[in-house]
Image 1 (cartoon, rainbow, N blue to C red):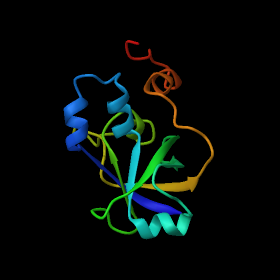
Image 2: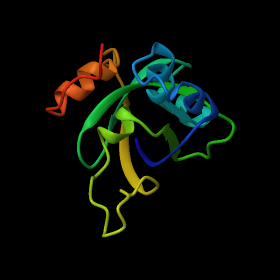
Image 3: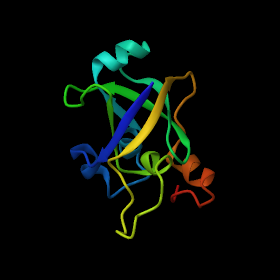
Image 4: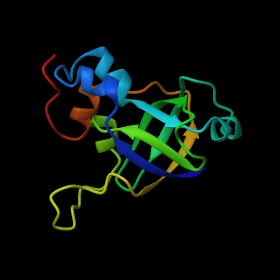
Length: 129
């Protein structure tokens, strides 16, 4: 299924942002919040794995129902998981388009990668372990 992906900060993310290598930060930023009816249509329960494919790549995340997210839309917190699938172009603004990406979602049996693995996949160095 195709969805409009928007990104932003969450309160839990703000609490853990000082330690981007923590399990709490990884858990928050690897969550794909979506409408419960969309989850039902995909046969998903809370914390099931989904593959999110965007304009620049794909990443496996955990789906969680949220009454604050409209049908046909997903919300992904800023961070390494969102950055893995969005286009880097800034249209001369200095900031990528974090609110307007069309993505495809599908259930998967794969586990989400760690932040360290994502950084290495992009050709960079893993965060300090």
